[in-house]
Image (cartoon, rainbow, N blue to C red; front, top):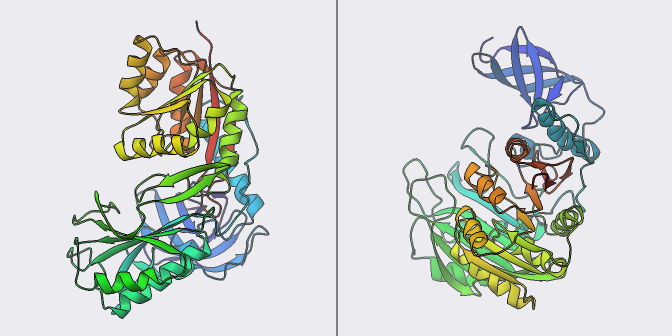
Length: 450
């Protein structure tokens, strides 16, 4: 097999990245935008030792599950790589990810629920971080083509709140008006690296964050005056990121105008959100996720709950009314400050948040005589560390509620918990990110030992 070779392929499966899977003369071929059951003519783009990547030249036999996508860039960039698949089939695909990983781990007896659908399948994201680059001599916003740093200019981001799209385009036009240079990542020059826009579905407040190479630039005062005129925008923040790095945000924020936070809601609870605070992207699905976790945990009024990886307190404060007390742990000091402020904002007196690493703080609390009944964890994609799992198990909670955003690391961690006298019999997938391959899930582990 060679690059640029044209081949006919029968697509037999979907990869975890939602690429069509085919086999040709002993090679596995991953085909962007292809679906199981389809026969396609494809062009080989890249060849490795045992696999290759290809793009469709022609679909000879089309899947009945295919949806016509008007703007194919959503699929090409990976921004919405399932956008060409019917929604019920997307939910099946996500459930199958979990089922297949359990099979590989020889855990076939675990029940996997149907994927909980999202109330909104498009326009659900309350936040967008989009790169700013020069394309053909003009400043553009968009998304990088999959497996590259080639910017595909976009003005409709499909999964993002349309009001955010409107603000992104308005700010882009102002950057052009004032001839503010886009970031040049090869030479680490230019000015604006990313536009980061957050919108509260509850209040309509919009925060605009300019991620910039410098702390200031000559056009900023005039630019700020015009951004302030954009309907709905309540604050402008300059995030200073001078490093040559793929990390989007720098460590320093400067408030240009407005309030340093916006307020959003999860169910009936209000949350103040700072520029770098983690807040679930899908505002309408988040309370459904948390309610599912609370229901499956079967919490009792006398339970003492530890909310590890607590962030700004979204899970712990949602749990608080069901239990005796909540103790949260988070390494980011500003997030802890926000979490305690959010408890006060909602009149919640039985939740308290502490700065530090959970694997160090939980054993200390246990040695001080604190009895933990339930631990909630919602870790990043890399999952839990063995050190955290050891520390959690040593506090001997009756239950550990694991909210996962990565089924691969979830299954790895569940295997480790099983060796430490914790068992589970069900995983419930939740669709927090329609049109993408990502799947969240809820698993409740129960202690079997003494």
